[in-house]
Structures are given as C-alpha cells and as structure tokens.
Image (cartoon, rainbow, N blue to C red; front, side, top):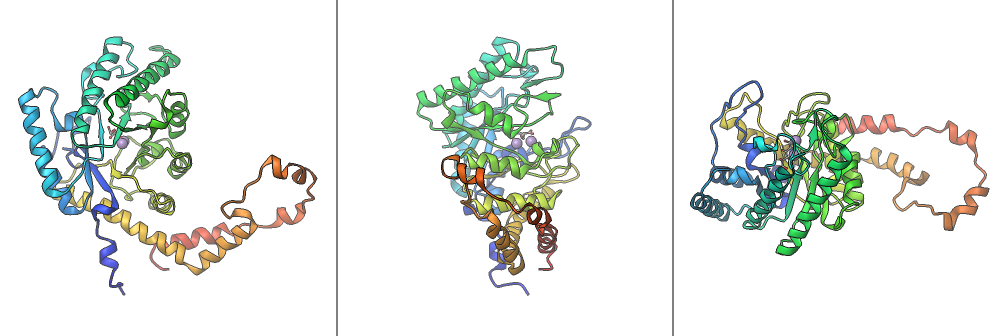
Length: 392
Ligand code: GCO
Ligand code: MN
Ligand code: MN
C-alpha cells in the first residue's frame, strides 16, 4: 500500500538541489557517426521546462548561452532574455564553465596546448566566461579538461603539461580574487575521450594536483559517475575520499557501462546498486551541494523523451533516497551493522601512536579466533539487494 506522503517525497523540488546543463537536456543527439536528431532548444525554453519539472537550476558553458560568433548586441539580448526566464521560473545558475574543447583551436588542449598562444587564449576565454557566470551569480566554476591530453606521448612532456595546467589554475585563482568573484573551482577528472588519454584522469590525480596549487582552499573536484565507471573504478570510493577532505564541490550524475565510449545515460539506468550506494553516501553525509545530471536522452528520443529523461533522472535519485531510508530502518540490517560496530567499525574508532603505540606493541591477539570469524557480508548484501528489489 502506498503511504500517504509517498507521492510527495518522490516529487522533485528546488530544495533537492537538482540541476541540469543547457548542454544536457539541450543535447541534439549528434554523435561521431550521425547528425543531430533533435532541433536546437533555446535556453529560455530549457529554463521554463526544467523549472516546471522541479529542478533547482541550470548550468552552462559560455557558448551554450552565447554562441562563439555573437556580437555584443546579440550577447546582451541573450543575457537579458535568459535572466528574465530565470526570474520567472525561480531557477538559479549555480555553476558555470568554459567550452575549451569545441573550437578547433583547442585540438591540442587549452591550458596544456603546446602552443603558448592557445594557452593564453584559453585563459582569456575562461576569464570572460567567469564574468558571464557571475552575471548570473554562479558560485561554482567547473574545469573539465576534455582536450587536455594526448594521443601520443611523443607530443609533449607530461611534466611540462602539469606545470602549464598548474600555472593556468593559479592564474585564474588570482583572477577570481582580483574580481572578488568568490567562485569555488571544481576540477572534473576523466580518463579519456575526446583525447586518447586525458591529464588528471581520476579523482585521486585531481586531489593530489590541488594540493600543489597556490590556493588549494579555492579548488575542489567535480567527479562524474561515468568517468570513473569508464575506468572501471568504484565511484563511491573516489567521491568519499574527496568528501572526507572537504573537496566535493559539485557532482555530475549519470550512468555508464564500464569499458564503453562515454555514454552519459540517465542516472540510475545502468548500475543500480552503484547508484544506490552513491545516493547513500551523499545522503548519509548530508551533502548539501548541487546534484547535477550531466547526461542526455537516448539518441532515439524526440523532445518528449528528453523531458522523460529529465524527470526520470530526478525521480530515480529520490526513489533511491527512499531505499536508503529503508536500509537504515531495516531491523536485520541494523542488527548486522551493530555487530560490526561492536567489533570496532563504529565511527570514531581511531588509534594513534601516541596513545596506543606501546599497548599495540604488547597486545596479545587470539589469532585463531580472529581467523575463524566471518563478517556476514553475504547476508548484508543480499538484504540490500532485497531492499532494492522491493521485497523488504
Ligand atoms: C564530458 C564532461 C562534460 C563536462 C562539462 C562541464 O564528459 O563531456 O562530463 O560534460 O562535465 O563540460 O564541465
Ligand atoms: Mn562526462
Ligand atoms: Mn561532466
């Protein structure tokens, strides 16, 4: 029987902080083998429609909003119309970013191109795009280095590329400070595609890089489900590691089968169990940032399918959130977790050399008993699966 409030908890609302990109719902379905299958959708229409569906906001690359060749007058009109649409629907622009991959000038990268004029152009484009984002009060600025990489290591010394990348982020941090913008920068790792190999391929690479910057506090990460899945990694682990050091500034949600091209499918549509544990992690940690769906409708779809995709992305998140509550409320799961806590898994079970060094050195262990005892994870996982399958 459906509980009276059940419908309501499944209805996306702005307080859930769901966002989409102009480029996500606006994706026309072009791929390397075929043309666009859907007509371009105006930013104004996207804002109106997402507002109706209960999203919190919409994000953009500079050129999603203002085309590369727009005149000053055209730019002004676009900005005015977009602002009016946002106001009317109550939608926000929490994140902005730069398109540093579409223009052929970036074929060898932007901040890491071997051509120093390209590197300077990338900085100029980013500064201007940061200005545009601030016209809409964006708070997070994402750096996805889609073209920062190589097909052949004969092309450049990756150590030099790291230095250029660092110089660029340091430069833009200074711009952020000089303008009083207060952006939080979020680096988005991806292992490959569109380059053969991309620099800063994983969350771990990005985190290590951040601590070498002049303003590490200003910079965090924007991890994406598909990017870790492409590399066969456990996404929740990377997200957890970023979160634990206060670096989860933003997150890109979608779905992806491992070992494929970059699919960008609807959140939860592939590895449901992985999606469940991700939602569990975010909800248990009280993650209050934006949950951005960086994905798009199947190429088979028309506009109706696009809105079904958007609705489904948010609904699946909320359904998984209900499953997280069911997990925590399940008496048998609670019992199994309590047994683990009693064994030492409870939060706060920490040791230090100062307090425990001598005791641990002298401790007598009952190794026979320790070797013999299982952890009951089979049961725990089966219960999780049964919750997901709706029988508990
Ligand atoms: C991709 C990336 C991009 C970025 C976007 C915003 O695989 O194409 O995920 O969609 O997220 O450029 O930075
Ligand atoms: Mn992606
Ligand atoms: Mn992304």
